[in-house]
Amino acid sequence: MSAPNKSYDPVEVEALKPEEIERMRDEALAAFAAAGGLDALHEAKIAHTGPASPLALANREIGALPPHAKAEAGKRVGQARGAVNRSLAARQAELEAERDARVLVEEAVDVTLPYDRTPSGARHPLTTLSERIEDVFTAMGYEVAEGPEAETEWLNFDALNIAADHPARGEHDTFFVRGARRPGGEAAGSGVVLRTHTSPVQVRSMLDREPPLYVICPGRVYRTDDLDATHTPVFHQVELLAVDEGLTMADLKGTLDHMVRALFGGEGMQTRLRPNFFPFTEPSAEMDMVCYVCRGESVGNPDRPCRTCSSEGWIELGGCGMVNPKVLTACGVDPGKYSGFAFGFGIERMLMFRHNVEDMRDMVEGDVRFTRPFGMEI
Ligand code: DAH
Image (cartoon, rainbow, N blue to C red; front, side, top):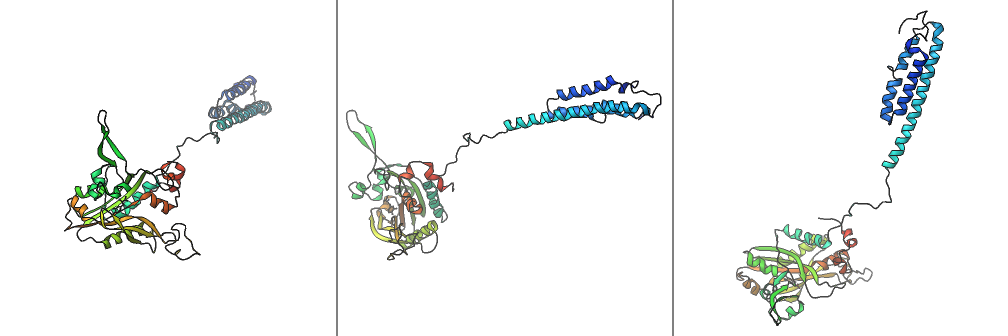
């Protein structure tokens, strides 16, 4: 700041002339008005109100004036700076309001809009359950085997000791695949059926590999049933086959007991075998498991009725037995050296009693409301 000079008159000092001060003020007001956004306004603020702004520099000059001239110059500069600051504040408020209004529009969330994320589905519980069963057996060293759903009659029936006129063949209510139609004639039999059970995979496994053989085969099977609460023409079975030296029915029983404990957990789970007949096993049995809900405690106990097993204490699971030596022979396995056990049961049925599914149609209709509660367990 320059020292006071007695002869100075603010009107004579270039920066303090009234028209200069007015010009500085007007320039500032114009710059604020021209600022289109808060950033531009900030720049204009520094340029016109900051320490290096024309008005701030003019203000400094006042100190150099003689006392009689200071008041007037001070008033003039002060008024100009006041006008500039008011204009700045007004523009600042204006631009902030504009920004707030814009943000409200740009960042608005319309909660009534339909959402565009694809709802996640769920795995079908039959898939999950069949993989669980596989896991129980692969953990014991079994391999998962597969076979085609369109199967030869020989593998589906004959090799399993179900002869053409065998009553069991009628019970299977088979879908036959039609062969080529001769001109003007009936379609010839193709020798192919939609497999009625997973047992032909036993035969395929024995034909494919040498014993010892431990395989589990889950898969889709077909019978000419109408769809109702307890039947479906397409359903799933799991087949198990073990062929080795010295296998007995005790091995079969131990394997079944382990399976129901692994799948249904807890104390008291076991199976029982009831004599039955299957052409491909000898001896054959029907296998039941302890009711996993009441664990047998509802039997003879009217105070504790059980809906799952109708208070019988047991739930029927499927069929099993020691592989018939005729089947071993048909598959090229020496029954003098090897013996085998096998079982098969329906996965839909197990899903029904394991999860209280009352209607089989729910499993085939593909409604995600049925599958979703089972979740994504993999
Ligand atoms: N294949 C039979 C069925 O579909 C079930 C069965 C019974 C499978 C006894 C077996 C078995 O492996 O040993 O009714």
